Length: 129
Image 1 (tube, rainbow, N blue to C red):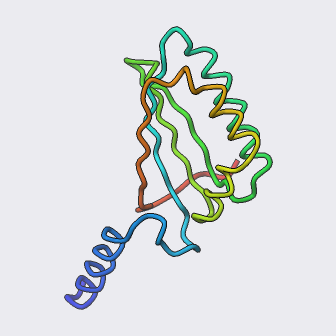
Image 2 (image 1 turned 90 degrees about the vertical axis):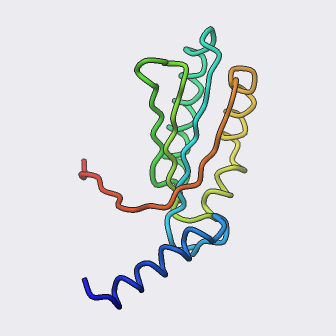
Image 3 (image 1 turned 60 degrees about the horizontal axis):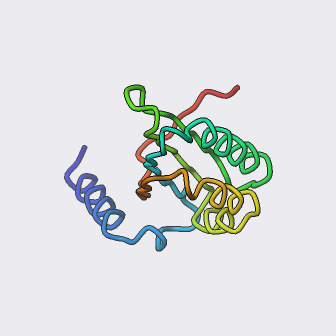
């Protein structure tokens, strides 16, 4: 790679890293990772609620590109949710849906902690079904 290409790449990466998540180009996918700690005694109820929410969001919202919820193998009450939206506007619209509001209300006493992390896609790939 030539020095000019490296400089351009470095400048682009710096600009992306320093920009706030909501200021990103609205044509780029908006990606978040949620780290959720669930009360172990309510884990099965939480799984039912997150399954219902993901099914509805993927089916009803064109801006929801992917939602994946997985449990830590060693600590099943630690849930990671990978969220990808068409853009930040699709994410904002998702937060206003009835099914998301129902999920938040239903799970509020199940969630012991929640960390939301904005992410920048490096490379996304999936096989078609």
